[in-house]
Length: 126
Image (cartoon, rainbow, N blue to C red):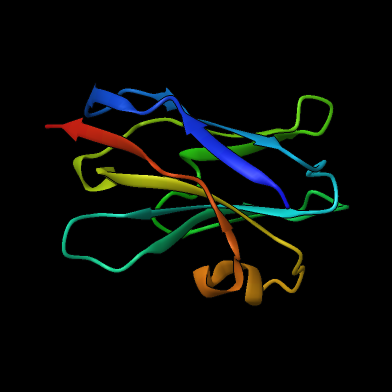
């Protein structure tokens, strides 16, 4: 079983940047599809970005495309989204998750991720 711990959240002004990180332990994440999701107060959990296991093909939510980039380092067993040009609407708790699914549609659904980190708060002030 893989365990996940997120870090790197914080308070940033609009237009600023943050880089989150997700450190995995217990198993190598090389074959796992790793997803980042976020949940704002009163809203449903939504996908931010995914990086597929084995081939590292990436997928991004439309709202973050061009601003966020997800990186995987299999040697360090980490996955990190670099978030640029942050907006107040990016404010949420960000979660890292792991799945053994690879289908493009399935990996964008949070219900298909059985393993989750505890989350890290990102707050973007206007």
